[in-house]
Length: 289
Length: 342
Image (cartoon, rainbow over all chains, first blue to last red; front, top):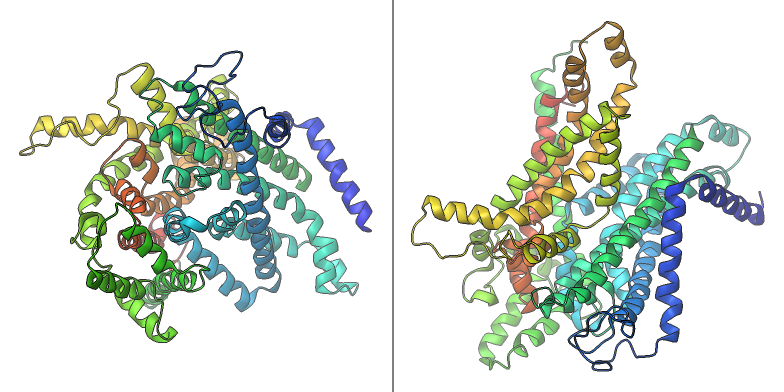
């Protein structure tokens, strides 16, 4: 199978899921809109979303300030847009790193088996036992003044690869015993070829599911670190928005628009990514049967 | 081959599990050592900078030197790798994390222990309630999967499950302490008691209700509900359950004896893991509700760059999770007769 065909098949499968699954369609649409809000709208922003006191402070939502303004005199809507972009960037970096490390370790462990499998799974289980959030708190506290957006994504990946690794390994273990793998092996294919042409097409779907779940995990983790004051406080992310809103007691002072904007966005992002992930896995289950 | 396990098998099982337990703790501690060793920034100097520049405090140079030495040992930095590794291990396994700067000169370990009862009280109760409620609801929703209420529950679960618990906590505060002020905004209790009376206990419970709810709602309607429902549906499609139907057994009997029993096995693993997690706790819940537990302590420690206290929390929670997984492994064969002491 050539590279081109590979790509075309994936795209036609995705279109198929989009047509058949309402959950996937809904989630995908919301994510698409979020991406427009996060990456394209900030280009047209009339104010600098990072600058303080660029608009009158503590204004409730109106036609001029769509979602109101904050105590620091920032427009909530434009702050929100750039936050969505930054948060999604961090999440995609995490997913790029963590889900691929997971894929690699899961593949190695599943295919080679034996001692290597035991060693890798022992390592994975150990990482599962280490309480991820506290580990991240310690690591970020130490590196506080050096954090950048790509680094944040990389740090979160320290704790987000074990689950994908376990998932991929169990998939490989069950695939390894199927007849088509035996046929390929008996017809003289070597292991790397079997991996790429026989196993990967089946694993690709699960890889996408893991990818979506890692994005979810990463956005959630960045938010919780930010509440601890351990994120890019000089920049905009959804977590940082929450941090300022909580630290300026937005809630107790009746500035509900300030704190509910990031909360509502987070909830929407979580639900839509989760729907995409279950839409995908339901489709895959149907295919396997 | 007899079904009963011999004494020798049992001893062998316990011994291998114990070795595995010790190895896990050892490996995770080593991993943390390696992580700090290869960190691109100088952890110790960075922390000392944060501490000394915090409130413009003037530090006695001798105590800064002492602090520096203490931190270098804690993080296994400086000196030759083998020596520093041994020093690091010594610190970890004697729980000697040095003084806590947020409450100088109390040892960090003692400080964490003093906050434990609060966290354990809140999280143990809510974990157990979450687990029971979630499994019960999941079982019923799986059993009556075509009824309307089961579908409503499922739709709710899909919305609630992906929301992180701290976002749920914020939503609950917004609703029940701000819009409809029934619950207090935060804190562990409203008065500092002279002695423990019934009033004080009620006051503590009253203050922990909203934090507990913010943990129970996403848990019971999220993960444990979804997994219990899936497991119940799977069990219902098995041959032995169908046979029980054909035999004409009453549905309550099938629900209890066939479905519930099979759900309990995998769900117990989840319970053990989350009981282990009780220790490190829902840190953000405590922060959001200003609840005086380990999470709040870690929060304050983070703000003043008190790495000793953070390290104490981290290492203690590793021990807690590893121990609960170990105990579960030993108890598993009692729950599931199919698993033998192997």
